[in-house]
Length: 523
Ligand code: CA
Image 1 (cartoon, rainbow, N blue to C red):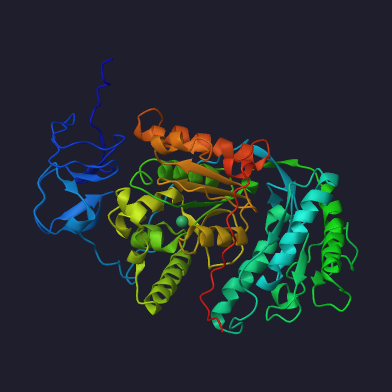
Image 2 (image 1 turned 90 degrees about the horizontal axis):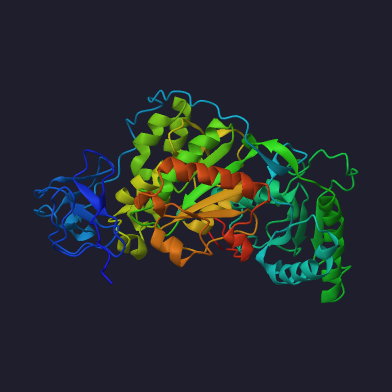
């Protein structure tokens, strides 16, 4: 049999770019000739950059029409342009930035799209009907895990409308400088996770008793009270099982208390039904992890297209990952819908710059060995590919880490880029759906919110066929457009939010831990 003819292909992101990435599976050998006549001087792995013309020492290397680095030596056309040949540019300063200068045309509204969700008493809508058991401190984690297993085995079968029971376990709560100014971040994160729309406003807490984060500090009166005619005033009080309570004699009495309390909440959750709600009730968090050079070519642009569809439908969509957008700060501040929103973004970035500086690093500490193997030379190149997840809509709000979103439109939720910390903070921000793109591949999932995973390459989508929900690699293969995959993702979001489809992470019950962002000292 004759071997299939391999056509050498590269992808250039902008007409002004002097490098492009090799898109063929497995990369290309030296001597390969592209359709435009360019011949490879070196072997170039898939996703890595090739010089499209002769680059002189010191020349700006352009991708996305942005200088991702400066040539450290003369680089002939057809050469492999890898990180060792590039000097990384300094971070853009945070003064003199354009503020709300892009007068983006208003995107045409998108009407008529709905999903089936659980309407909560506070007006928010859940995509799942989950009992969450909040914990105030890590000390109780083992007990809660034991109780959750018993609840799943013995109680859940009696409440078929409840999707799951989740113990909100974490490492905070004691042994921490709880009065430090930055302690507000982990505390409000935990509070707002408890109030995520997927938990139906049913708040129950397991506390140890002697911990620094007392239940009333975590959930002060008024912070969680949801006006609900189904509950009496007593029922609306904070529902706490305290393990050190004198009522508890022996381990099993603690488990019995948790199960009795859980039963009351399960009864109310079980009585709920899905109802048709407009797509504007979606609250979607987007992020990427295990990125490669295709992230910014296939999956992230498709997510960006879907982000615009969500904004057009009146929904809320948030992008995050401060170190991965820091190098595009001028693009973001110019897209802010008001100068005040631009200022809020600058404030968040300045806070994060200072946070990194305290640890004697900068945003370049972000890139991983896998990123580099996937063709991303540095954080500037990674950021340009990451930022496209935000689409083209004006940025209409900014959240500090752990804050809860209160508005529609495109929101910048400032979080670290760490997958599990970003996911945790987006759950606190109130997402009912999570979209996650990956090039290297990660089995990431959350127990609290469905995670739709988008592969950047067909090779990954083929090998991880039962872990990836969408293959955006078809864009690089020329089989689908960015718009096609963006629409496919948008429609899948409605299906998943409605509970009609489960994501692969849900199917296999792949759940990463909640990981709190705690910039305050530990004692
Ligand atoms: Ca991430």
